[in-house]
Image (tube, rainbow, N blue to C red):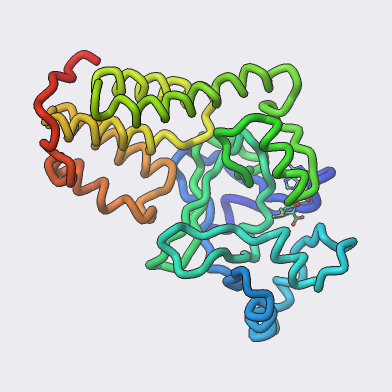
Length: 289
Ligand SMILES: C[S@@+](CC[C@H](N)C(=O)[O-])C[C@H]1O[C@@H](n2cnc3c(N)ncnc32)[C@H](O)[C@@H]1O
């Protein structure tokens, strides 16, 4: 763990939070950390897991914030509900609580992204944009490609605060909503056109990537994957290789080399034909799209 890149300190109206102590370049792993405790939907199991913690870890756990103090919940459950982060789909466990990572506050315009690695059993936090020394390190607690209303509703219900980020500010929320709505439309159009009109599908991939560049909330690797897959499917292997390289680079910036898809994407960049759908469609010239 690199303790020098950040500090955890009090922050006005948010409790504690994490701040950069130096300039951090996009793609840097800001922190990697093993969970204090794994948690799931079984309350009894959660309480037993917390009870089994070492004295030091128990102290760290009970030092975390609890926003559910008025709800007559056991303190342990309040802390879990405030601090647990979901793990990846490939994990046997649902979520985990961390001594340091659980201190990261929310923004709908985050500068870091979480990534769970089920082999190392660690959570990694990667900078998705350059972060200047002194800035707060912020992740998103909600799906970033949703409208302001939906994000605010979830944050209020689950975390009991109103986000004041630039995308929630009245002046820019309408434009941001229109952008995320269009990105989601592009996503649907890619699925619709992938098998009938691959040129149109690639156009939608490019449009979504350009819009994501504008709002910088991460999530570009998914579209790079679409670009790669469509080119591989219609036997445009030279282009597929270019998309696979872009996919690998984008994924490395978003999820790091510790991301669980990194090995698979590396294989595509070495050999675009490694994809299961490679050459499945009749050849369509996708050059110049
Ligand atoms: C996982 S904890 C984050 C660390 C917490 N601030 C602390 O003091 O330990 C989540 C809680 O932090 C606070 N929080 C996170 N992001 C916030 C934000 N953007 N504005 C206000 N409060 C925020 C809320 O109380 C939320 O329920």
